[in-house]
Amino acid sequence: MQFKEMDAIRLYDAILRSKLLNLYCEARDYPYSSLKYHILLTCAFFYNMKHKTKFKNLYLCENLPAESPFQIIYRDKTTTWAILPDRRE
Image 1 (tube, rainbow, N blue to C red):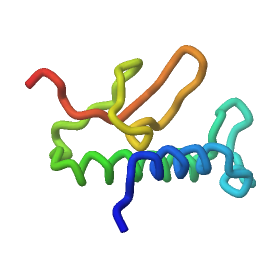
Image 2 (cartoon, rainbow, N blue to C red):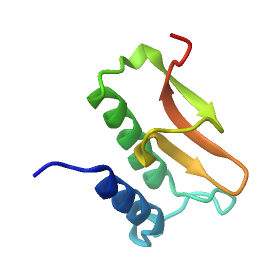
Image 3 (cartoon, rainbow, N blue to C red):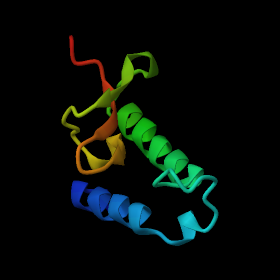
Image 4 (cartoon, one colour):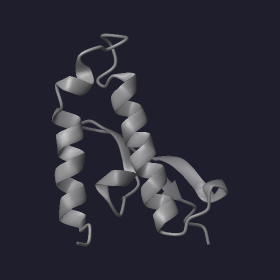
């Protein structure tokens, strides 16, 4: 069975909505627990590595379009942070 982009979207949404991942939140001012951030970072690195992007070519980008929700590590009404490959090539 092949993992499809729709599966990634559903899994990403499940991670964001998870109450279990927010049981212990270190700071009330942050929207996600560190566990949730680490899971999203791991997904972003995995997605980019799977698509043959070298680690040295990845950047934390603000408000640039992502190919997959797995590249996004934070999103609110005005800001999206994503781990993306260098697009200057």
